[in-house]
Amino acid sequence: MRRPGLWAAVLASVLLAACASTGGGAALKPGDSRDAVQARWGAPRGQYDLPEGGKRLLYINQPIATETYVFDFDARDRLVRTEQSRTRERFEAAGKAQWHQSEVLRNFGLPAGRDKVERTEPARWSYRFLDNRYPRLAVLHFGTTGQVVRVEILDDSERTDDRYL
Image 1 (cartoon, helix red, strand yellow):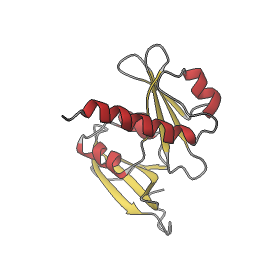
Image 2 (cartoon, one colour):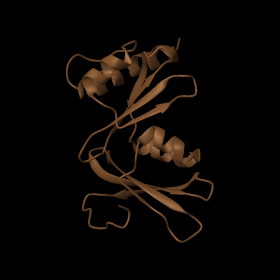
Image 3 (cartoon, one colour):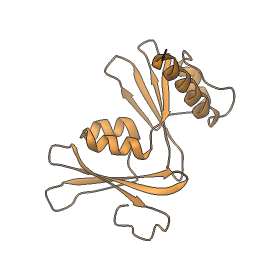
């Protein structure tokens, strides 16, 4: 008998422990308070309201900014979920679902670069990330309504082409 809920819970616990280990000290666990997370990780780089009434805190590794750790809290300020959001799959999902700029910010934080272009696409944002330990650059192109219309995943190993930064 398959138990997808059980596997999802196990996977969430493993991811939570893995992400928490980068913050130092004892591992974080579901149910921990927002104050406990902030005491361990410091001030977040971003804070957003969630539709269910909770909060989302974003922590971005500095100075290279290739990872964004997302901590979601319920309305009682208890940790319910965490993940490292800068992955190829998440960037591609943003394109397929045509996320709005506000949703991109809630999931990845501020981009490494932003520019407006003189075409039908008024803006593009770039994010550095690691894809199987290889440096990549995700470039999200936005349409006139602020929705993602295209995602490019570029090699970022040389970083000689700065037009996306």
